[in-house]
Image (cartoon, rainbow, N blue to C red; front, side, top):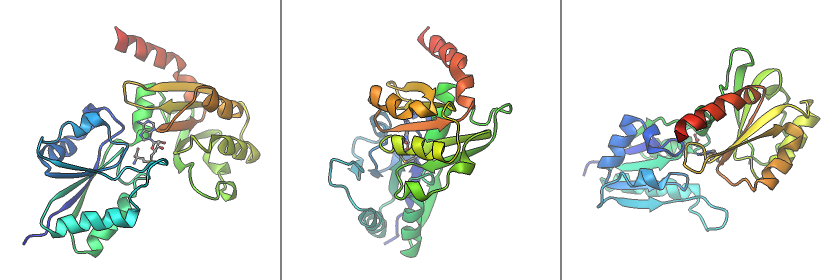
Length: 251
Ligand code: SAH
């Protein structure tokens, strides 16, 4: 029996229009799709009616499939001769554990191919008119995971401030600690930021404020995951751009 291939496919930030053609083709042809919770239902709707969809959603509330069991599931299916589309939100290699799944596949001798996707940072930037490296403001952009343990021990001082844009994934719950830490590391309390919730989805929200106000902003607007925190002067530039973009969309 021929071993199947594991395709690690980036589903982008939400809107199916933002899939790559390769991702769309693989989804439309797949017989087995193993997806995580961030994948928008509109994307799963592209699958064949007889496709088997397996959710391995990571959620705080529910018991979730541990990563080694996800790896084992992918490998088992491929070794039984099935091609597997492993569909992940955004890009598989940006905080998506795609690296671990690729290593598990290769260790088991299973062919693995990776299809890049538009990461949340790129989607959120486009949808909110925040040019992450606007030439006047920033020549460095960093993607950081805000959920990680040991937040306090990390040195984030070099990642934000003059000439730099910081994009924080998975930072909603830890927003107060993040703001405190950045200010302790020397970032100005009035450094502008934006929180982009549900980027590239119909329920997208873009909230703005100064760094010192981040905890209140998140609490007052009851920001929920998935959301990104973008910190830097590029976010202040986007005010007029965003309102124009939204007006054009509405008309
Ligand atoms: N691989 C994904 C990221 C997975 S980590 C990617 O490349 O985008 C999950 C985090 O991504 C969420 O906690 C959130 O911070 C961010 N995220 C994913 N989709 C998002 C969206 N549509 N809007 C805002 N943030 C999003």
